[in-house]
Each structure stands twice: as C-alpha cells, then as structure tokens.
Length: 313
Image (cartoon, rainbow, N blue to C red; front, side, top):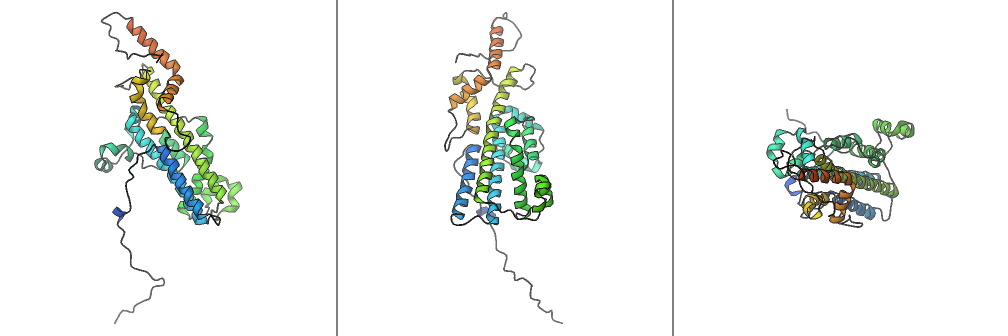
C-alpha cells in the first residue's frame, strides 16, 4: 500500500544554513568599560529615536530596548571585573578560589583566562552582590545600596521581556510588589518613550555610581593592605606616595575606570592620583612614620626594608 502524503498544517520552508563564523567581527578600539557602556547605551537610544520619530514605541521594540540596556550593564561589569583581575593583585587573590571548568581553562589563552570567570549573570541584585562580594566588596556603599531597588525593578522587567515576550508573570509581579501589580499579571510591557528614557538614565546613574565606588574601593584597598603589617599578601611593590614613582602603578587603575570619550570626561590622571593620596592621608602618614623609624634602627637590624615615602611630592 502506498503511503498517503499528508499536507502539513503549517507550510515549512527549507532550513537555511547559518555560518556563525560570519556573524561576529572584532572591534579595533579598546575603551574603558564605562566608556563602552555609555557608547552602547547611546547606540540603543539612537535606534529608539529613529524608530519613534513618528509614533510611540511598539511593545516589541520596548522589550528589545530594555534587553539592550541591561545587556550593556552586564557587559560593563563582566569587562570591568575580568580586566581588574589582570591589574589588581588583591582581586586576583580574592578570585583564587573561584571554580573554573577545566575545559575552559585549557582552551582559553592565558591573557583572557580571567574573562572566563565572568560568564555569570549580573541581571539581578542577588547576582550582582555575589559577584562584587567575590572581589571583596562585602559591604556596599550607601549610594549603591539606595539604587539597588530601582535596578532590581528593571531586572524584573527584563525577565518578562526575555522569558515571556514582555508579558508580566506571577513571580515577577510578586517580586515587583503584588499589591500594586496583581491586576497587571498577563499584561504586556508597553512603555512610553519617556519611560524608556527614564530606564536608560537610571541605569547610567547606577553604573556610574558603581564605577566610582569600585574604583575607590580597589585603590584604597591597596593602601590599606600595604599599611597593615598583619596582611599576609606578598607585595612585589609599594606606593611611594610620589606621583612620578607611582604613576606607572596607578595608571592601569585610572585607565580601567576613567571616562575618556564624551563629556564630561574624568579628571586627569595626576589629579585622580592626588585625590587617591589625599583620601588616604592617615595611612600615608603611618607608612611615612614607619619608614622614618626604620632609618633610626641600628645597622644589622632584621627589620624588613621599607620603601621610601615622601608626603611633600
């Protein structure tokens, strides 16, 4: 008996061939993570402005825009923390116990291995705190803490856009606040241009705030660790508290966190160094006093060699 051809309910075309090796390209210019974040956000804003020149954004466009904004945030944190591990010994020490798949370690070039540590998500406050905790920021500054509720709300909207095509689910309604959102369950995310602009602005404020505080945390931490005789970390260098001597060590931190492209740009390198030095004045004084004391010890003392410091430079 011959098989009877059954016409499919939905017509299906031949499956196209997709060559993923042709879908990516390298970008030649290497910018700081904060510069990249602002450029990525602005690129999305341009697309939004063009698409809404004559009409309000469609729900589908709203979802795509929010996905883009949060992707820019996650890329910022991944890039920042992976690069930080290359320049900051204390960050690398803190990440020493972080689990890494053997297959990843074998296939990644040494210079990009740290980046492999940050395939984790940053799309929730819990995940963000965990990642910052891994580098030693267990207690977040008040300015960051006060912005976390807003960031978390945007993350819940993103979750709806990713997993439910923009429709509000029960769990996200609960997390956003069931008393205010219960009647919106099943509703479609449909923001105005002003709403999307507010989301973009809130994320820019949040990321800039994090950028400033992480910079201060990691640079101040070097001074605190070097000033603590009980710290077990073996330093191969010390702050001299003279700009000309410290410039080579301070510049990688500045380059990683500074905004160079756009307006307003970050303060110049030398000014940023002196802010760092002034904010650690008490430790500078302590380290200088210990050095001066070491000069008065008799010859043959077994005390460790001190690096010369100078508060007048």
